[in-house]
Image (tube, rainbow, N blue to C red):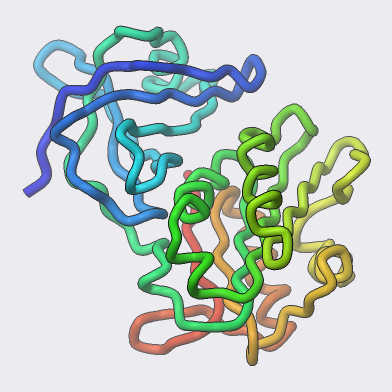
Length: 248
């Protein structure tokens, strides 16, 4: 049964003035599956003001981490943005969600495509042994407006170092150009084959599974492009190739 647990902030990272991560400790929080989410909140009187956040941390981490943006008119995110080490917060137990590898059909290649904070669940998945034991090739496609909006790049680079033969990272920004990445939007770059050419792999129903997470517009447009490439949405009752989770 779902219940609120007490947690305490033990660390924070400010990627820029509008993107931050919180790490907190909660000894009673049960083990979760990489890719899942839960509600995080702060107490207001006898209520908890909360919203769901994907867990960035891996299932074996001793602490829990989320990534967030302070929405200007939001009720919760600006309060989370103010939290410092030692401050209390609440976390809902247990975590839930189906954007997990156990729900994805087997394939040769796994494409993880995210925008903004949607990279969170994929970082959790990359922290597991399961993904490296299951797929020959793993591709992380991570889009944002500007390069400084790309969080966890040093962590991502460690996966490239540890798995040089089967991990590919494609950073994408839409409002500037970067040296080692692509310029534009994920759906457009899929349609022009720019992403596929960047990593030297095709996206084909015979060998590909795609997980999408982030901006609903990106997910809708990318899904349509992937369908045009021959892929189909994955459902338990009708296995396919595209698994997704929309943010907001």
